[in-house]
Length: 436
Image 1 (cartoon, rainbow, N blue to C red):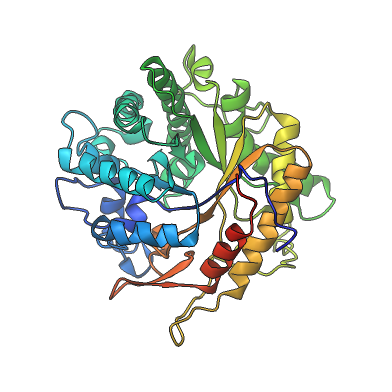
Image 2 (cartoon, one colour):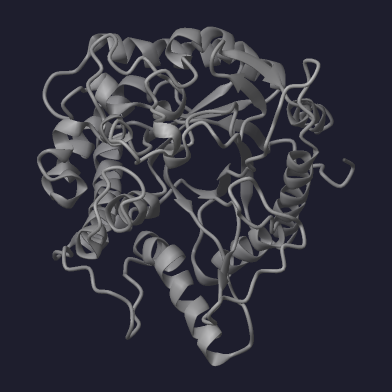
């Protein structure tokens, strides 16, 4: 581990999201989200799994926070379930839901762990979807009201607020391919959703700062470099287009105040005068989620990726060099704020044998990706922290409970958490870091 020594101020964390772990979907005033609706439609989620119980974190949060503290991390990234605190997405607030997050934040601080709050991790109140969801411009204002209320309530204790997690997923997987909630398949709506997500981010930052909240504010993007499978002009052009749609479409409005322009890129018809200026609010940080690269092949069948470092249980190529490539490319192309790696992790077919989970592939994944972060930092990229995804196995969206990303194995029948060898490895890595 001697090649994995980071600056004393570097933050070490783990991450989760509300619908993936909380359960208690109809308790204490919580109303349905789009993921409750989607997961209860037959065939939408593997094995017809739902997040009704998930990891039962809503009831087990105190022992889960003890588990986080035992890892030795100093930061925890989690999301607020909008329909738990404001059931209809507008109007009345739910004091029981608000109280849960008050206790969660206070419990983290009591354990010396910095609370990093994500305001939206895909669980839109179903009541808002019924009115058009993110395709309706009114939802932008509803989000701003929600974000401001959360910032005013928790801003004195939170270490940061991220407005959105992975707007590409919400727009494309949720509204263009239909693989995620709300399950729509309309590319025009998807672009409108993407624009409204970015606009709501900018307006939320304006409102929170105008209210005098001093907590660092940012957004989290899932990003990957795109590699042409061959040196052909067709593969090179495909890689450029896929990178533009995956990375530039979100980075450029945020960091440059414009959408990327190219003859074959779609136009966002929802754009109104002043929107881009609103979106391009100064960021205190940018969260980057990285899992694999985009492999761009126009051949039929496609040229296979080398997979030199293996693949995850999601079928994704393990390609740590892509994280260095991505970060250095972003630094080259944009005026970047400080960066946090807000998600990075691997699904593995983990089983408990004699009370242990030997997940060496995950340890190798973590080691090589942290080396990639270090290489980017050595090249001048300002990376301030790393959050492993995820703290524990959980509801992995349309894959249900079949895919395990956690440092802790969860037996969903008993809710027993078992530390994997990767958890012990991560704790030892953190223990050897220089103290601040």
